[in-house]
Structure formats: structure tokens, C-alpha cells
Amino acid sequence: MIVVPVNGLDSTKSRLSPVLSPSERAVLTLAMLEDVLDACMAQAGWEVRVVSRAEAALEIAARRGARCVQEQGGALLAAIDQAQGDVRGRQSHLAVVLADLPLLTAPGLARGLALGANASVVAAPAHSDGGTNLLIRRPPSAIAARFGRSSFSRHRAEAYRRGVTFQEARIAELAFDLDRPADIRRVLESPRASRTRAVCLDLGLAARLSEHV
Image 1 (cartoon, one colour):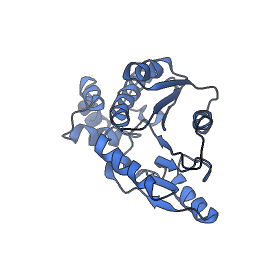
Image 2 (tube, one colour):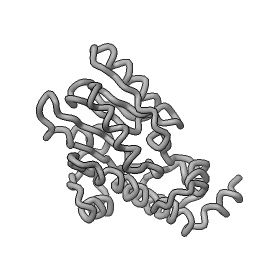
Image 3 (tube, rainbow, N blue to C red):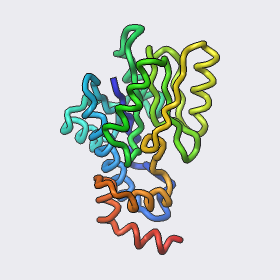
Image 4 (cartoon, rainbow, N blue to C red):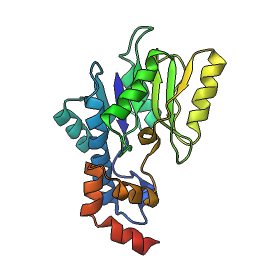
């Protein structure tokens, strides 16, 4: 199973507030979700679930054929725990893919998921803060999930502590998450056509970034 948790849209991507209004940040968040779902829904043999309290995110998930899970808690880890309750069996895989990976492609995600065939835990580090952008556990109880700053090193240490195999997913498109104004510039400079890039262009963010600098 692939789980894509999506935060509430009312306070999403606060570090982009110098260049984007709250409503614009919500639009950008939904565009990134669509790009991530493009990659997830292309993975044969994987059920995709989107967990969120944001109705707009769940509407997008339903339209794309993903299973929608209404978030009951108010935190990322609670959303993941909520989704993994249905995953059973020692050989079952649970992959958590964060929803703010605008450069993610289906082949790139497939490379990351394939690493789970030979390791109990697979994690992709975020280049920005050492967080975790992809976490695969087989079974989900192999280690506890942690997200946020420096969580990649904590996942790795926990896997070693518990004596389960660990594999780092060194894949550039999994390492890049959009959190800061400078990240928008990288999306705009990317040759890849994506919904995220289209939204950034529609909002005139190239000019705004120049003014911000």
C-alpha cells in the first residue's frame, strides 16, 4: 500500500508566506498532490490511499482513483497510523510518500519502491532538512515512523537498533521537497512539465521571487 498524507490547507506551506498568500499556498499544495498522484497511481500492484482532512485533497484523490481516508487526528503520524491499520502480514509493504515532491516521476518512484524487495526499511532523505520523503516498511511494524527534520537519520538508527535491514533511496527527485521560496525557482527552471510548474507560472512567481530577493 502507498499512503500519501496531506496536511490541512488552512496552514499549509507556511515557509512560503513571504511570496504566497494562504489561498495560493493551498492551490500549490493541491497541484503538488496531483503530481505525486501521477507517480503513485502508475505503480502496478500498489493500492494508493490519500489521508487528509482537506476535502479538496480527498476530491482530487477520488477523481484519480485513489482511496480516500478522512483524517481523524491532526498530525502527520496520526494520519499514517490511521492508514496502516488495514495492512496485515509480515510480508506486507507500507510506503509513505509525502505530497510535496513536485519533481517526482513514476520511474523514479518505482526505483524507490523496488528497494523494498530486499530491505525491511527503505527511506529517502530530504535534501533540505534531513527529513524523510519516502518511507517503506516491511512489515509496517518493523520500525516506528518518524517525520520532520532529521527523521531520516532516526529511521536509519532505529532500523540498526532493531536489527532489520535498511536501504537508503538516493534518488534526486525523491530528495527534493518544495518548502521554501528558493525551491519554487528550481521548479520553474525544471524542463519537466508538471501541474506544480504550471501553477507557479500562472501565479507569476518568477517575477515575485526576483522582487523578494
